[in-house]
Image 1: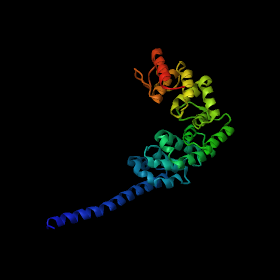
Image 2: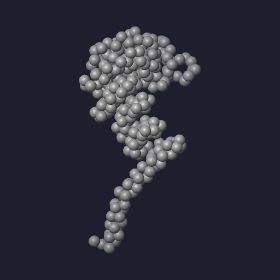
Image 3: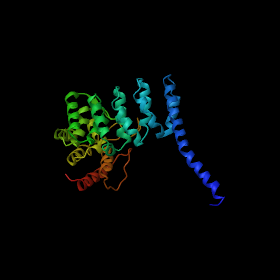
Image 4: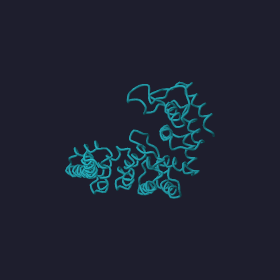
Length: 304
């Protein structure tokens, strides 16, 4: 070996030796930041918590203890960091938060799972299904929780939803604060239908034809979770011709308001990947010809 090669090899050996310790030091630094931020939060100082969001997914492994803290505000802060992330590492911690003593936190965790993570990937994690069942049994009737459990087939999911229906009465729920308020039983029916329950399927068919404006708007907003062709056709028949104005889609106070048929066009084109010759958009009002084109596209692409 040449004399010139010896310093080079020594340098490389030193570099490789130092790299793991740098990683450990970095992890220790992030852990210290998380601990310092939550210590400050106990004193009602949340500035450091807000700075943790800049660290992204790096902080996720250190949030678990604070999801179990006796202080509900600290649990809320930990959950807020998780709900901002799409990293899969957040999923088991969000599942843990589904069992929180606070219904508000349980609902927030369910919504984060629903909005931030692919439900088909969630379905591969049995722990998420078990947490959803326990959460609903515990009283979590948030629409996001009820919709997600439909991705976990089995008798236990069916039983959880059936027991919920028995105690739900006239209780109402919502997917998010800006979404329509609907009966708990309607959100449950979406998952019951997905799980093959005939009563759930019939409830969706009836709502598609005769439901209130809010109920049908809700079904359009959760079209991803509806997989029965007969329900999709019934909902299309009940919404594509309805020119009733709805609250969402345009800024508050702006006229003209969107109509249920406009939301239906957007929802069905996206859900079924329909081939159409016009552009869709959340602020558009569609012409009768464009609406009819969606009807025709559905008839040719979706078997009854």
